[in-house]
View 1: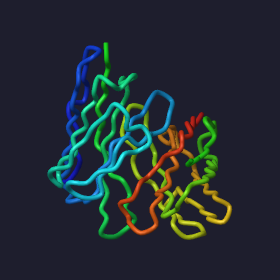
View 2: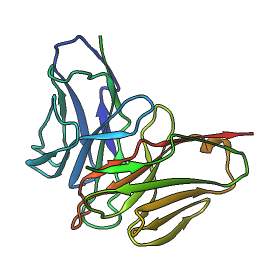
View 3: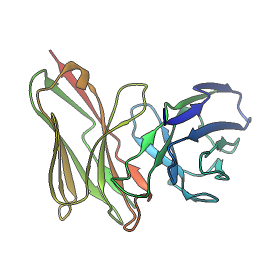
View 4: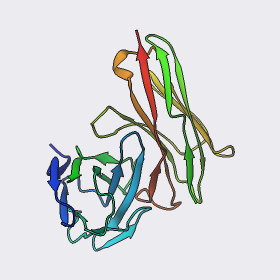
Length: 114
Length: 113
């Protein structure tokens, strides 16, 4: 079945360590997105990519980095420069070729920094 | 800056109708989305409006007025499983369906028996 796979689902890390969250999609979608969600809050955009080898900063990109070397993959690295990395991270993709272009989300990765 | 406002919390009774409002002030507009999110889960797509008017989908309807920067999500015949957060989101770019999509803070709806 087509979909978006995020891994790991739960991740614990010590302060000062970089961590990479994986996001893979087999929907053949052009665009991919990373959002962060804190308890009781909406989704805030970290980075997004409309096409392979290109990406743009969202509203809270500081302390994060991404790459888009393949259409299917959009990994997110949470670096030690991110001051409050503990959060629920959601990856999404959308089809730019027609329809509404709604986002399809992965199951999320919950990162806890100890 | 971009601003999307929704009420933080709402409560309604099973079987009733509830309307969740969303107002937005953004630098661009290429569609408004509503998503449902149950606690601890990923959001799921409910509806999309790009032109003014009402879109109906079963028990859910969504309305858009671009001139007023206003949308609402209407839920009819409420069921207990409708207890969730409802997220309003605006796509900013005017020429692509892959443009930047920003979300409001979400409205947590509690349905009571």
